[in-house]
Amino acid sequence: GGADPDRAVPTGDMYSQDGDADEPEWVKTEREQFVEFRDKNRDGKMDKEETKDWILPSDYDHAEAEARHLVYESDQDKDGKLTREEIVDKSDLFVGSQATDFGEALVRHDEF
Image (tube, rainbow, N blue to C red; front, side):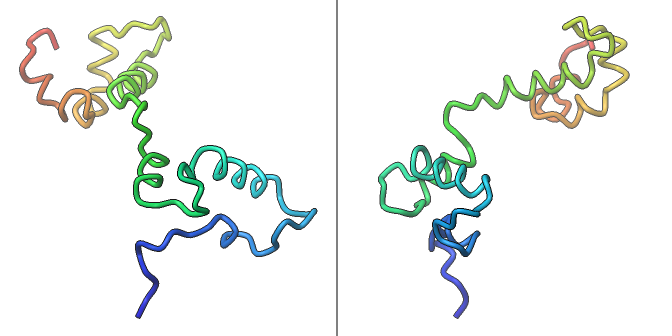
């Protein structure tokens, strides 16, 4: 029998000394984040839903994040706009992007 995959791992398991004055700053920060935001039902562990919210927050806009990434990576003159040349220059980035349905949107639009 291996470890139970549904068993939540308390933050304390990542760092052995409990409440030690010399504990690293990241441990204190993680403990605060856990208590304040991650353990929503305050049972001392993260269940499946709490873990899902931590990894994929519901207020995270994937389309906007991907669009910002594409513009950031492609906008060579940093004017906030993409020219045809900038898009063509980084075409591999656009073809592999979920924002263009992995290139499908580029095939449907002749302006590209």
